[in-house]
Image (cartoon, rainbow, N blue to C red):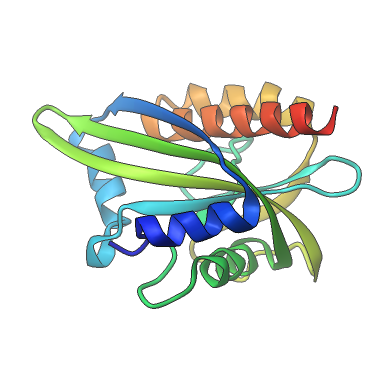
Length: 190
């Protein structure tokens, strides 16, 4: 396991205790295979980054397989031997071109992706961050075709609708995570 309980305790000490949620999604064999691709070397987690600017816009990305209008917050895995913070910062740079600082641990989502009797248990760590520099343009252009800023109403409206309209449980999960993260950010700033 890449991200141990000890590492998470340290993350919580630095960025606060997150809201913890549990979800389950039924998938097709092909959809479960996509999740399995992210499990190299036994990885069963991702770090999702809600990068917020001074105007309260949020950085979103689009992968090559997504239809036009479908975006989500950037995410990726901490590599074996890499610190949690370094992995999150590297993923942000690769997917968005931005340098970031982590600010707050928002959500720990324990999710079970299921296809019949086949199950993948996964944990997503959602952190709020802000940009300290860089240029908003993906560096890993094989994985990410576009990075841009979106308004909160756009993310909770047309972007959410586009993600859900794909019929993908994985993208519905991403839409739900983004929506909950926005609720928590808005609650924290009021």
